[in-house]
Length: 207
Picture 1 (cartoon, rainbow, N blue to C red):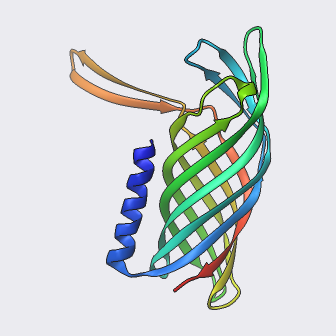
Picture 2 (cartoon, rainbow, N blue to C red; picture 1 turned 90 degrees about the vertical axis):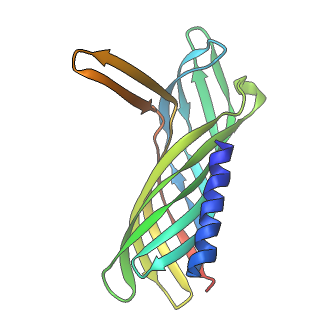
């Protein structure tokens, strides 16, 4: 998944160099709510857990391709209290939770100053657990989305308020099937982790 993050940065850089569009610095802040999930670790420890709510911050760059569309590259981080509850043991600790995402944003202009927007993102998520959780850092494919309102204060400065959902993919599988109707192939993915966030971003147009 680290290769995926590098690929996202490369694609974003290529878009920036070729299109020569507008560039806006994004600074994120918000609150991410508690989330419960199920897990099955490689060491055989399985059960359920909780990612505690907390402040999430982030930075990013938005490249405007047109007045109503843009591409963004975003990094977000939060430090959370986490517990893992197994069959006979409970582990309590803290973990950093990180997202590196690339995606597209579409704006709906309501007036010269106000616009609604929606973003869809894909990328990588990874954690940095402390020793108390007895687990190693894991990197997973992740997806996310954001809906909100942008208010333009001046030619350079704007404020966005949003609701956001982020989810790392916990498992994936592929299958190839034969039957009387022929052959077919499929890929399935799934997750029990869905992090919901309410926040915003203070943005500065660099050019």
